[in-house]
Length: 368
Image 1 (cartoon, rainbow, N blue to C red):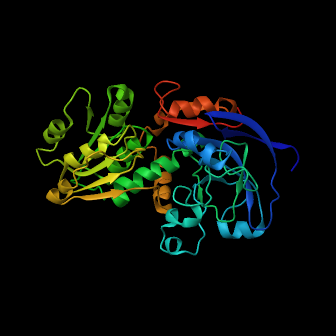
Image 2 (cartoon, rainbow, N blue to C red):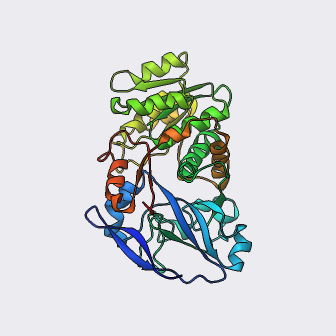
Image 3 (cartoon, one colour):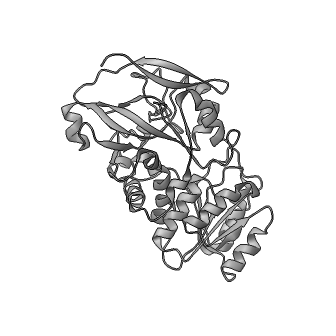
């Protein structure tokens, strides 16, 4: 292909710049995606603050939706897609043959682990690794032979389809791992995109009581949580969390607590407090620092299951795309802001709580 690929590159000191890259050579077993839209994940903000320092310049963005532009014959047979198909990419680039891959837990594969190892994955791999186009904040993205695809239903527009991964997280956490079902009382801490995704998943699973907690500044998000199917919302700055959860659950407290809050470790303490005896607590939001004076004896006394959650399974994303296509929920209201490549710094700051107001899920359109 002729010409250059324009992409926004994350640099040190909270800077980005537009750079041009050569189109990669496409062999029999790889391909090229024309990016339509890429969602801005909450994890992009800490990556932006730290990864350019530790890994060098990189193209962020891993919630990518686009059209398969080119691919080799072997890649087509392996992926089950054809040129012209609209697909949603997962961030993982698993090896395909390790224990985790063979047991369906490929998100834990060392080959694609950039937090605990030196793996590669979309949105967190340096441009110094050939062929550079590893992120969605670009006009085109390289399709690695081990890329994981999902067909996007024809009724789902690209901007809405960028919710496939965050909604997949909600399905994974609330339903597949949390086992929400009829009769389950669920408390979701943090009404951001991940928390709202958990609301939808818990509602879809039939949970009988869904409670969402947040701050006073989250008023618009808490209102949307009710539209998505939550039964109650709690402003923790004006209401007592423990007393209100007790009131809504008849004193039994929560069967399942999903902590999606990102403000600090205090929500881990409250999550343990509001879980019932024999309940389950899922920790889904990165805190950035340890929990001070954590009372582990409370886990013992309440016979709690405490589990850290990371990412989503293939099945969860497939279910998320089915939910998106169903039209049963006003998920389009989560798509609050759209940015171009030149506006990426503002997009990242917005997700980090320092940019545009009232943001829920932001997208980058590389063709704006």
